[in-house]
Every structure is written in structure tokens, then in C-alpha cells.
Length: 119
Image (cartoon, rainbow, N blue to C red; front, side):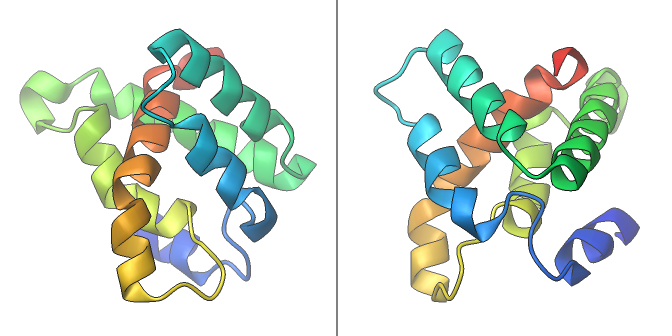
């Protein structure tokens, strides 16, 4: 709860409003998993330095959480469902817009959590 609160209270999301569409496009279902990883890593590396370093740290932490998924039931997909609404936020979006993009947001974050220790 505390990490989600921290992310929610940031003046701008870790994945900045300007980079939102790049993250969504990088999670396209038309891409292979390897292509998604490459494009998403590029998105992370294009973030402002403070956002990038914080995001990489959180992704590494979430990747570590998944290492105990047989005990805590939190795999990368479950963690993405919990955290994506606080990390990938579209500026001035309606709840309907957020719902429409939720699958792509979860896909993007889940992919990044899986490779979180290699960023």
C-alpha cells in the first residue's frame, strides 16, 4: 500500500505523461515478446534521469517479489494489475480511457517486471 501511495502522490507519474503513448505502443500485441522488451527498455531509458533510476529500482524490486510467487501468488501479471494504474497514467484521461488502455498498460508493466533485474 505504501509504494502505491507514493506512486499515486507523485506530481507526474514515473512514466511521464509525454512517454505514455510510447509505452502503450511498445506493448502492441503485434510485436513478439523480444521486440516488446527491446522497445520497452528504450522507453524506460528515454525517461528523465530521476524517473528512469526510480523506475528501474522499483522494477528490480517487483522482479524480486516475483521470485517468491509460489508463496505470495504475485507473478508479474498480478503485480502489473496492481501497479500499472499508478505508474502508467494518461494525462486528463477519463475512467473509460483508462479502462480501454488497461490491458496494454498491464502488458507493458508485466514485461518490464519480468526483465526488471536486467535493466
